Image 1 (tube, rainbow, N blue to C red):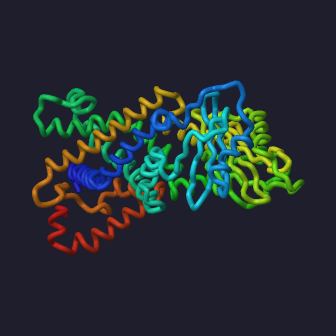
Image 2 (cartoon, rainbow, N blue to C red):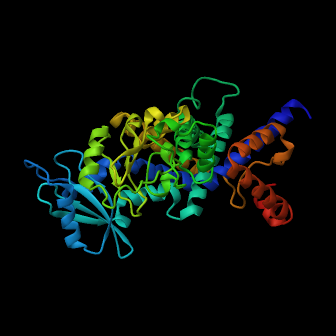
Image 3 (cartoon, rainbow, N blue to C red):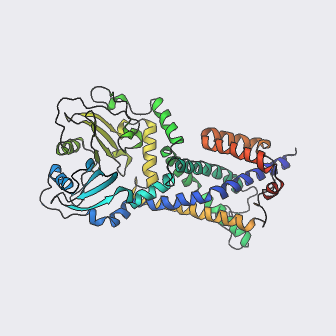
Length: 447
């Protein structure tokens, strides 16, 4: 086959896959970009929404934690206290999470008066809903897989889009680095998709790669490999004997990514009277943990107090296990204990969330998200204006298996991202069983 024909076939194949993948996943990418834009400002939004709960008037001294819990027991005598979060400064309320009547509530307590200033059902937290939509479309495991699939196919879109954007015969930077405004509507529509896509491609790839460690399939396998290769938590985090509980920390508490597979130690039954939360708070302060930490309260006799903190900066992350009877620190896992992969992921997560470098980080991530929104909308609009009345409007192109270069690229991406590989097999079966065998469908897909 002549080189020019081979080149045209490769170009058409890439264009075809880019088009179909874009049309299919644009709605999901648009949703992820919108929810991500909102979530970047979680702290600011919640400080406005819940100001009456968060803000307290400073007085001379704070009450002991045990005195603050008396208000909780008065309001909910049958409830189980599961978590406590001391206010990080003198103007911040304490938070007590309880479990009652199959509900999880957070009570906000004025640490100076011991009185409740409000309560929230944890199912009703707006930013938690945004996070749930962003991470799993509020559809559990199925939603998580759909988000992961969209993220992985976004990488395919980036690779194929770069090939389509790359100038074959450059005549200036118009249509490459900036849109051509005076070349007619057809060219302008193309440029309003291709040019912004180029500018945000690097940032989008970064957001995808830093978000994948949270995913249920790829992220879980990546975490397992990280731990099994010795890049997970090192033995040096243990103070005393190694844990024997067989439970991972992520099963009892929400903790930083690097600590999720950390084994939970057990409390040695040295006494029947557990340490009070007052004593645990003092121990926490002595460890120098970042002040926005939470204390997860053990519910079993052999359980431990677990301290977890999600600070703005990766370097301040910490996960600490404390014996509930002796008050001994059994494990103290900090950023400095992470392996190189753990540190990279920790930085990636705080950059992804827009907290590592404050407002500058938020604005940079917001610009990327807005660029993705523009690219998704302009791409669908471009396709809609180009497509014929009957059919998808994709170019006629040889089958994937007849375009070796692109085939090997897709195989590589399929190995690296299993859901991509699985979806390619589904597409191939759909093509073989339906598209190629039903004339009307075949004409609609222009095969």
